[in-house]
Image (cartoon, rainbow, N blue to C red; front, side, top):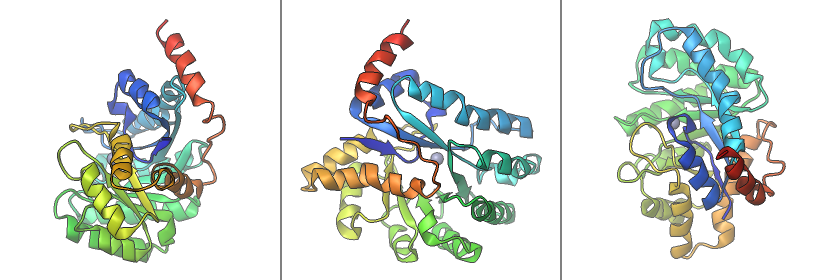
Length: 282
Ligand SMILES: [Zn+2]
């Protein structure tokens, strides 16, 4: 099983996680820019973080033969802090970088007017830089948040096929399926979405435009839940090819729209990971 995790925050994970992911078949991932827990008070904290997402984390991932890409944005939560607004001005510089494959995470946290403004401005940046967009849906008031998200996407003029709407569940998937946007699901150990529920959704809605990720953020999370979802699919009668489509070819197709996905020598990852782990231990 080869896995491309389309949404995972490696910044909050340990080297052991990279090692376990490589051993389980994770060959590539996308790390979206997000909230770092501690509120940031100036634009410099953001640029240092963005530099880590295009520099340090790809290096850390490469030690385990994992190809790392990033999405860059001002996250919805910090869109509400006027001190962070300046970040919008530095984004164009990052959206031109090689390892950046989308604008994201953008979207809503509490659905404030500030979030409206920052969300729309960043969808415009996606059009300007010819990049897809990764859109976070709020964890509270999810149905209303998703409906409003789809309205803003429609108004932006960004083609639905270039937008992934993430953190969906049984309640919100239908509207996103109809919109033509990609459907993202974050699998968590005990809340929000499980591998078994994911399999039911795939049965009902099919495999097209489906993205499954482990999110692995600051809460309790498990970077191997993509693998567990693949196993649950097989147990439920899906084929190896179905699993490869959802866990590899779909994310490649979505982020491939950036024309910046670099998956060269990913196939050689097995031997590479072994060598690098030994090197990393010295
Ligand atoms: Zn996230």
